[in-house]
Image 1: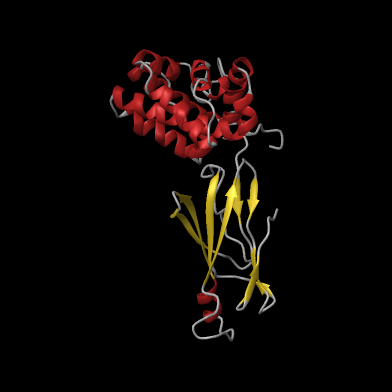
Image 2: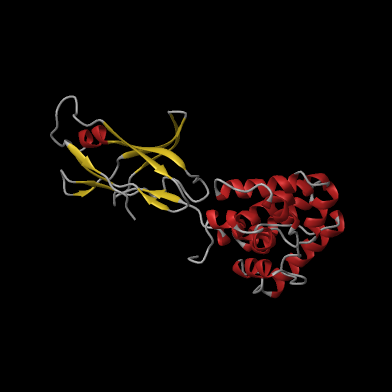
Amino acid sequence: MADRISLRTLSELAREPFVELLGPVFEHSPWIAEQAFDERPFASRAELHSTMCRILAQASLERRVAIIAAHPDLAVGRDMTEESVSEQQSAGLDRLDVELKRRLVGANEEYRSRFGFSCIVCVRRAGTLDAILAAIERRTDSTRDEQIDENIGEICAIAGLRLADLVAAGWVTTHVLDTARGEPGAGMEVTIAAIEDGAARTLKTLVTNADGRTDEPLLSEDEFAPGRYEVRFRVGPYFERRGVPTSSPPYLDEVPIRVHLAEDAHYHVPLIVSPWGYTTYRGS
């Protein structure tokens, strides 16, 4: 997705190209992008997504039902946008065997006859085809108001994935190298906190894996927002567990690194450490 637009560039677009780019995020409903344009700039992609979902949630019942009705039935293939075609293909809905397609079409028709609109499922997060079919069958035994709300939730989930395909966001990673032992710093606890009004608010605590990295980013694209952060490494307990000779109490206990993440980009905050000193830098 190297051609995704940055959040900063997106916020600088004029209304027409902004709506042209983000209009398809909500099926046949560019009015959501048009209203979101007036609320620029956005601090993060998550804030943009939240704003667009709020606009939808605050719309009239008529408009909410209209956007639900704008979505195609699963596996039927009529009146589908390019985005819906791609999403259904990714879930294998264009390659169903005869029996599974019969069941899926039948479940869709029963749902539509009960509620007057399609059952919307975010197929990219739903899992297996059986899970999609089970969701439709479960949701048919519900009320219309409940299904309006559930469909709006699925529409927002779809929109979040479509935004991720279009708009780049920042993320934060780390890597610990243990120079005392000459190997990756596996099993070290790492915490990332947001610095707000001079105080640190903990966001996440992870433990480094065998490669000295964390299995997930310190901040993912969906979690990232520009601002000041502190990455804190629990160095003392790490060396103590490994029996590395040090002072008592340890000279280095916790290593806090404060950084200012100013834009949507990949920030890598590594630590090269021994019991007596450490180095960090802006990595990649």
